[in-house]
Amino acid sequence: MTLSVENTKTRTKLPEPEESDSLYEARKQIYPQSVSGTFRNIKWGLLVGGMLLYYFLPFLRWDRGPDQPGQAVLIDLANGRFYFFGIAIWPQEVYYITGLLILAAFTLFLMNALAGRVWCGYLCPQTVWTDLYLLIERWTQGERRERMKKAGQPWTARTMAQAVSKHALWLLVAWWTGGAWVLYFADAPTLVKQLATFDAPAQAYIWIGIFTATTYVLAGFAREQVCLYMCPWPRIQAALTDEWALNVTYRVDRGEPRGSVKKARALREAGQPAGDCVDCNQCVVVCPTGVDIRNGLDMGCVQCGLCIDACDTVMTKIGRPKGLIGYDTDLNVERRAQGLPALKPRIFRARTITYMVLILGVAAFMGVSLATRHTLGVDVMHDRNPIFVALSDGSLRNGYTIRALNKTGAARDFTLTLEGLPRGQLDILGQKGAGALDVHVEADQTLELRVMVTTPPDATPPQSTPIKFILTDPKTGEQASRADFFKGP
Image (cartoon, rainbow, N blue to C red):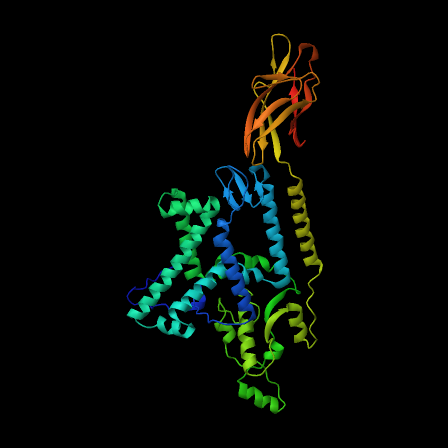
């Protein structure tokens, strides 16, 4: 077999691959146009309310007594506490945080079952901060057409000043976002003063820098790319929805065939079918992700409803009924395609009722648990080496490490008692006795005690005897106990 060698100088050049052959889609810059209407007003209200809550909540005060943090919401990592108004969560109570995460997950599932990606369109931080950044962009560089026109022109002193103003305001918002975040981890007024005088811990400046950079990049530049490629929720929510979920929908049966206002009027006068859609493209230009909802439900659609406002505005101007684009179910889309009447949305169905029951159940369990939880606690750890000690007089002794917890804002005196060994003797810090021992624990503190339990020579217990340590507040009668064993030969 012979091999022919082709001269590289005469080799035919292969054609360049088409764009469709690429593994990645080139980004198309989106210039969303401003719009007014019901859903835009809802988004503005949630944006303002959410921003005020996030930025100023750390400055809200709450009196917990002397020597206690005065911040209403505080994550005290140094002392292992989470304060939320009148509630203080200890590290041993991390299950409350788990419960909150479970509640958030079930609530998200319920929102998806009711109205699709309504979280994405109205409450997601990426959406909220992007909306704010777009507002700043319009203030400084003008509306959609003006921004598109400037994008293809050489820089001038005016356009450069506008760009600098925009990015300066973007950075200011990003910096404020990062600064507000660290205020949840320390006393806000104190930390603000330290930051202003450059006396704050290095970690504060580092985290402010991280959140400033991420907010500036994600809300200012990445924008819809986060929703389309970075966020996993669009892929997950498709498995959690059903045909009764409300989604932003274009009514094909009413909108098609498309045409101009004059053409549609002429067709109607001639008794021929004419759609209400005038192909003005307003639903596309106001979309923050650039989706054309008339092509059907799209993974890029965040269900924000801005296209509904834009379409309703156009329908009002041309004298046609609103609702060409609106929240509707997949079931009604199929029914209209078959010429059947639409059905009213079913809010209460097996899926949503299940989520509601789960939410109420978890919330009720957490509420009851919080209302009945103890303000004191006790933990016991038996010595491992040696497990027991035989004394010279024939008595047996076991050693334990006991932690007494005081979860209130005032110092308290407790009594420690032993149950299960009738003749057992407690020894703690020089105190001895068969009855109760006094334990003093400072406010919001844990006290570690070294405790010895001894039995007399004539009362040798079995190899392993169940016992119980009981911590009691004599003033309130509140008790906490922990079971363990007394070991013998």
